[in-house]
Image 1 (cartoon, rainbow, N blue to C red):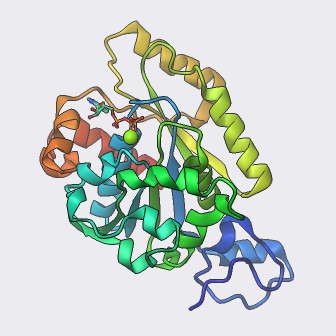
Image 2 (cartoon, rainbow, N blue to C red):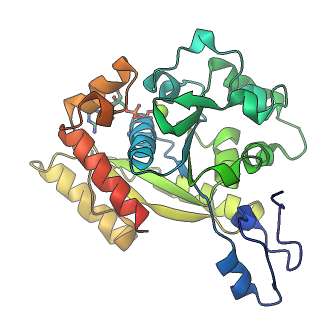
Image 3 (tube, protein in one colour):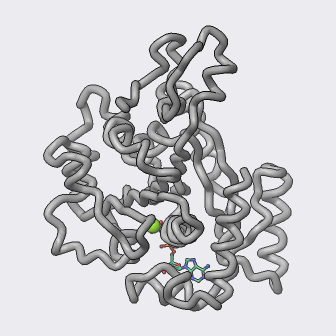
Length: 289
Ligand code: ATP
Ligand code: MG
């Protein structure tokens, strides 16, 4: 079935474009919302570098796929860490996200099979840097990723977007395409610093391009429960974000750091590790939100 950009009768737009059921009557918007079975598109974002965005993107995607969900992981960072972390050899790539965004390749040319049967990936390469520069004055530049993903939305239950460590055009594209933003917070001093800018960017995208955009939650990463510092970060996060902070915390775990060098998510590299258990627990908690 062709997926319309908005409900053809009531013009419900934004994130409601993941239409899977036929609309019979949409004079009442509440009925329409019930009939929109949504693929969840989640941006993993924090402009702070090295806080666990990519580790969360890879391992959440793999955990959801292992639970039987159809998942597409989109590497939206020119560092392409999610791509290599999933065992994809960048020099072998003919096309990557960049080519899809600028219209040089179709969506089917850039989606690749990946490690688990239920998991697919759109890889990135360093050329993604060019997108920011080339699109600087292009019309509709904030919606390029949304337009691309819209073509395959029906095939997936979850689309996870690994964002770059910047509030750049790529991040704005990710937010415009998403239902929600998941914010990993490293359990270190300064963890909450800069969050205001991130929340402002979410607010701006919500106002201009994507009224349905929500914050999915805050995930504490590299959490060491033995330290006061980690506990203080958790308490501060709870003070500001309340129930938005996930109960599951990702511990600092050596297997999580090693797994990408083998091109594997931790649940396949060492499924008994604390890192693996915590991302599986986190995926379970996320499914309930
Ligand atoms: P960037 O901002 O550069 O994209 P990022 O936010 O995506 O970084 P990651 O690449 O996921 O962060 O993590 C940074 C480094 O910390 C990596 O080397 C990763 O393997 C390691 N790391 C992430 N989470 C953990 C953890 N829970 N335990 C141990 N090491 C971790
Ligand atoms: Mg990263």
